[in-house]
Image (cartoon, rainbow over all chains, first blue to last red; front, side):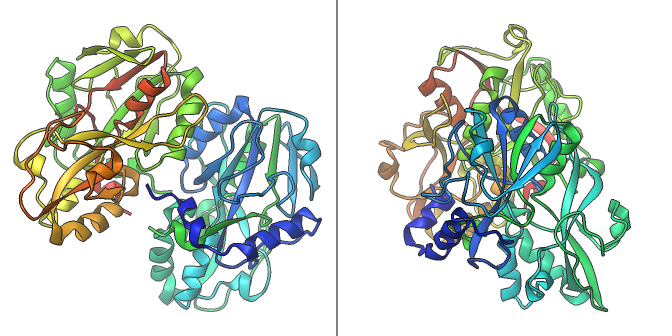
Amino acid sequence: MTIPTDYLRHTDASAARAARAAYRAGRVEPTCGIAPGFTQANMIVLPRDWAFEFLLYTQRNPKPCPVLDVSDPGMVETKLAPGADLRTDLPLYRIWRDGKLVEETADASAAWAERDDLVAFLIGCSFTFETAMRDAGIEIRHMTDKGNVPMYLTDQPCRPAGRLRGNMVVSMRPVPAGRVADAATISARFPAVHGAPVHVGAPEDIGIKDLARPDFGEAVRIEPGEVPVFWACGVTPQAAVTASGVPFAITHAPGHMLITDIPDTAYHV
Amino acid sequence: MTIPTDYLRHTDASAARAARAAYRAGRVEPTCGIAPGFTQANMIVLPRDWAFEFLLYTQRNPKPCPVLDVSDPGMVETKLAPGADLRTDLPLYRIWRDGKLVEETADASAAWAERDDLVAFLIGCSFTFETAMRDAGIEIRHMTDKGNVPMYLTDQPCRPAGRLRGNMVVSMRPVPAGRVADAATISARFPAVHGAPVHVGAPEDIGIKDLARPDFGEAVRIEPGEVPVFWACGVTPQAAVTASGVPFAITHAPGHMLITDIPDTAYHV
């Protein structure tokens, strides 16, 4: 049975490993453009008591929350990046208590040590289809300008699961009007990493008041003739943590992802 | 955000509803070929205490266990078939105790009433891509011969999750050698309902000793020039119930599925 980890056998993942080693040593940077071609993942870590409801939340909201791997309770490893330590190998973490962001840190070891039953969920990231879009000649503006992708909290509710609820977060890429269909079909081939756009144009229609002021990441230029295209975003679980008052969570900081050993092509259907 | 239930708004699902009403009234039959064009689903119902581990099992084994919907604990409804009662609207159920099949029944109400925390998982079925394969001129032998699809327990282990483990079950369709690639690419476009084949030819390589003696369903003719093609099968959870000694479960009987209101095309990517 083909699973993405089968791809590890014939892949030289040294660039991914080197990035994780740098983050373990303390380096902090957005991961956009780092180790190109390797899939990056969002992370959310929750107590076992919340694990079923969160996994159900992802099943009910697969566009923003496509699960790539789940750790066993108490473990800090993933099959997607052999040898990685999820407590230290992302560049920047957020610690949440009672739904509130209380700390950003480059090392989540202390927070992780507070409980012995934490479950880590790794969730697909739209960076994965950016390689295919660039190969098709579609400029990725935030890569051109060397910034973080802009992300917005929408007014679109996710389908609740038990105690969990919240609105969807989206990422935005400006696309020339003549390439919007290509951007849609190319990203649709990667359903495990958010897939096709959820919205094209009309940001006000999903509760986005000002594209120049994203809720996460950085704003990007939009040139004449370009349309804002919105993809479901793996920061959506953080919005659920806030909306639901989850008592304890560790997440990645937006744009500061886990770089896995899995090549982006593994998620092409 | 597009979810399969969006398709309900413009679909006349009266054929699906009529089938469910007949099963509720006591009719028993395999659902292959019934209400063509409507997605059918495998079902497994477990106590809340097993729900996280099972959902994790499906996440780790997405080819045999693609989840289409999960009920809230204690509920008997699904968004995929408004008005359906999961206790009565499948034609045939199996009741499992301590990993053993103890009963087949056309009405699961009594078993369901034993606990108030049961969670129902609905899992994709390869019948969904059969319509697309037939439209492409690929004969579906078990439909031509009006039987149930043959299913086999393989020696291929699924990735465990907590207390759950077991081998993969596959369905088999004989395909002319010149159409095997088409069968693979067409079914690959339906990743939510098992997707591409897991194995082509060489049944002994996955522990199948005799194609004429399936573990579930009925054997089918294989003509000269045809190759047995194997798809991951939604009966795999029943193999896990047995292998793991799950204390209590309700499932559909193999080939006797829930017929939903969702058209097959909803799962085309």
